[in-house]
Structure formats: structure tokens, C-alpha cells
Length: 340
Image (cartoon, rainbow, N blue to C red; front, side, top):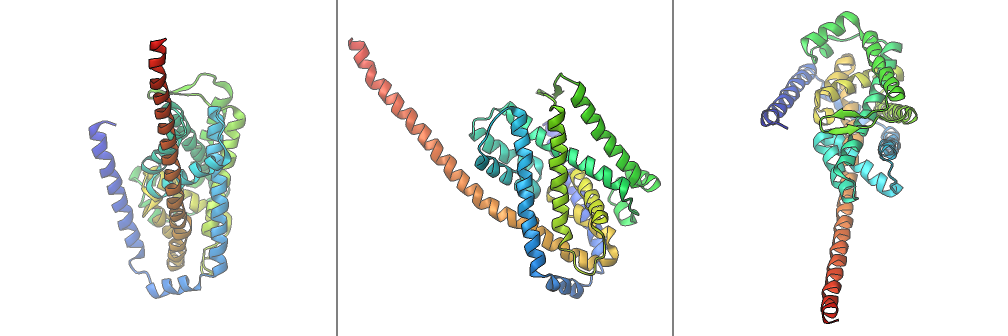
């Protein structure tokens, strides 16, 4: 990355974060904290239990991302290792961002398991592609089937040109454009045999069967993630799951597009903007959702990461010990060969 880009990117991210935070503050400045606390206290244990269970199911489904990427590379990996890499990688990506969290963690893990730099780059590229295929396919479908009225608070999050375009055409147009990208990708995978050249790396396109698997895994992941949030909604929020899924996906698209780690401020502002009349109830659900879907897995991933580092350290010591013993044996045998 060029020095100028290294400076500009954090500044832009900070500006986006501050802007989203300001908008969120503007949306919540007259928030009734007593009402918020009432909604938090009214949260049932069964709701939180179901949300935790769905989160666990979601992380099992997320293993499919790494499994497809490993298949794409032509490697085999035991399910235990696959689960560890997937869990740590996804939790890091969700909380710290894909670049600084998920990618760096996966490089540490997969390089320790003897994957080459080229293979890790290809693996990370396939993971990102799988996620975006699901977002484009599911969001495109939902925006066509469940068109939403777009609140002014949401449009304020977007650049002026994007807000004006979306306000004049609506979500169905955006849905059609997103689905067109998915169809184009599947078509290219079906007919193109040469790898794509991305910067210094050659990226062979997945076969059509694996491409469909990418869409299926990612769509399942997104629908379960939305379910985690949906079951936490207080009784004051009356919305069907399809409508909620459309809003959730729109918030996710904006969050990922703006590259704010964990979507802090951006995701929350979009969700509150669409449910402004029930903002206390939505804010309560947001707080619990972040605890269940982000912070709880982060705590577990920290312990798993510690265990993995201990295991990798022991493996490294064993390898060093074996090399030293081999060198000593070779050194001891050298005088005998010389004498002979």
C-alpha cells in the first residue's frame, strides 16, 4: 500500500465513523432512557437463549466459507482445524474488520499449517467473494420482493449522489442491479477458463457447482444472522421477518461498503432510521444483539486463540527439537565417514 493511501484510508474511516456516530446521536438525542431500560428488563431469558443458540448455528454454517475455500484450493483439512480457523477468522473479521482482523488472523493460522502466501491470498479472496455473492443474491431478491419506503434518516448516511439515485428509483432498482451482478458472475464462471489477474495474483474462477455453493452458504449465513437479531426484538416492534431481513441486509450492505469495523455506528444508524417510531425498543435489541453476536463469540474466540497459540508453540518447539537432533546425529556421523 502506498504511503499516501496508508494515511488517507484511516482518515476516511474515521470521518465515516464520526459522521455515522453524529447521525446516530441525532436520531437518539431524544431517546427515553427509562423506556430503553424497561425494554431491556422485559427481554426474556428464552429470547436470549434462542439468540445464543442461533448464533452457535450461524458459526457452524460459517465453517462452510472456509470449507469451500479449502476445496477450491484442492486441499484437505481436518474438521477440527477448519472449525478453529473459521471461528477465529470470522469473529476477528466481525469485530475488527476483514482486513485488520479476519485476514491477518487467517494468515497467522494457515501459514502455521504450511499454506503458501499465494494460497492464503486465494483463500481470503474466495471467502470475501462468497460473502458478497450471498449479500448480492439475497439482498437483490429481498429488495425486489419486499420494497421498503426509504426514510430520510437513512438517505442522510449515503453520499449525496447515492441518496438522490436511491430516492428517485427505490430499492427494486437496486435489487435488480445486485442480482445482475450475481448472474454475470455465474455466467463468467461457466464460460471462462483463464484465471483472473488481480494485482500480482492469478485467481482461477470456481467451477459452477462451487459457485452455487458459495451463494447457498452465504445466504444461509445471512438469514440466520438476521434471525438472531429478529428474535431479540421486543414486543413493541411489530415487523414481519421478510421486511426485517430487507432492512437488515440494507444496513449490512452500507456497513460493509463503508468498511467500518463491526459496523459500529453505521449499522446501528440504519436500523434505528428504519424503526424511528420504536427507537427505544430497537436500541434495546441492538445492544443485546451486539452482546450475543459479537462480544460473546469474541470472548470465546480469545480463549480458543490462546489454546491455538499454545498448541502452535509446542509444535514449533517439537520441530526445532527434531531438527537439532537430526543436526547432532549428522555431526556425530561426520567423523566416522571422514575416518573411513
